[in-house]
Structure formats: C-alpha cells, structure tokens
Image (cartoon, rainbow, N blue to C red; front, side):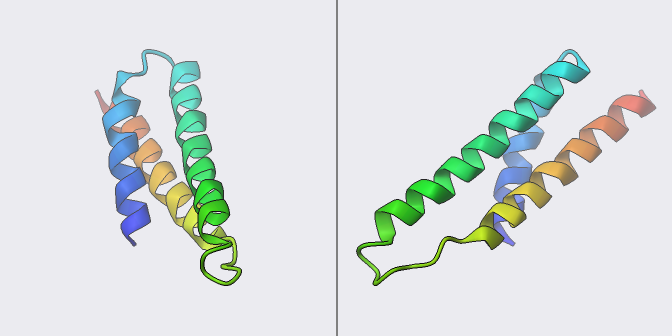
Length: 81
C-alpha cells in the first residue's frame, strides 16, 4: 500500500505540470520507468546479500496502480474545469 501512495503522490505532483496529452503520457511513462528501474536496482543490490531475493513484481504492480489512479484523477479534474 505504501507503493501505491508514494507513486500516486509523485504522479500528482508531476502530472498537473503537463500542458498537453502527449506530455501527460510522457510523464506517466517516465514515472513508470523510474518505478521499474528502482525495483531492478533493488533486486540487483539485494539479490546477492539476501540469499537470492526474488524480483518483486508486485511492487511494480502497486507502483503502476498508484500512478494510474493519479492519472485518472488528474484527467478527470481537467475535464471538469
């Protein structure tokens, strides 16, 4: 649940800065790449020190859920104004 909140908050900070739909999707893609990169880096750093820790796909799922919820919130509020 912390991942949903953290990446949702990050998206809520950055997505309102977009001036077009293309910029909004570019920001969304960049945040998704940061989420995947962080999990891959975490896997590579801790894999050898914690006896073969598995890659945490569920963290990427939670990051993406937070990101998409924020994307929907920003898109919905823009349509209303």
